[in-house]
Image (cartoon, rainbow, N blue to C red; front, side, top):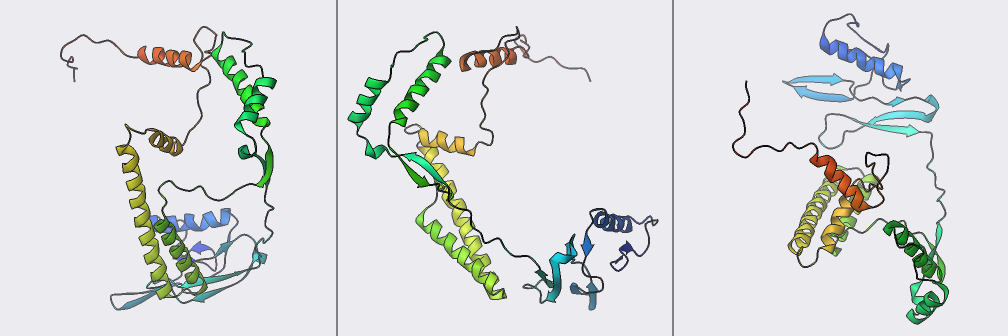
Length: 289
């Protein structure tokens, strides 16, 4: 019931029909967003319902700048879809300027011997603490001394590696399946035929099933070896965390703040225990309806 020539619903907005009211809100949303549509009288969907051919305009090209759209062409549908394909010609060009690789200074530990590193740390760094009353201050001081030792290691300028992080469950066969899947979709982009689409979709499913199976096997492996080697298990859990920020200090309630993680834990434990009510032993009391 949408008239794309006038940008309105044929029955008008005063109609109490919920379907027509939703269609009018659909058109108003485009107008309020400053969007323009390309097709007005074309047919983008054909289907046969009880020996009756239904034709309608259900697919649309929306844009805000007329100068960016050079033209739209209706092409054959993809696979068995009853919607036609739309080929849009845009007046844009991809940005082919590659950003220069970034360089960073990386310490090369292989260029200094352990004896040289030991002599440097003993002759140039005072390992006595200036304060022994606060654990946090001692750790900050020790961290600064370790950074001074690391600064003595020869550094080299290397390119920043932006490659994706290797997944712990990744295997050679899984990498091969991923490459086959990417090649199949690349072939489909060049020649979008039904055969290429079915081939790419099949390799996509094979890769997804193999990846899930490899991930499950890896999780079973690290959980079965939890008692002997728990580092890989907790490392995997840390990487799965979404929030990695920690609580630095908490208010004790008297205007002062905690200085260590132990004190913060005690304040949290006290706050949690204060909300619990100690109940007498025996069955729970019955509540009145």
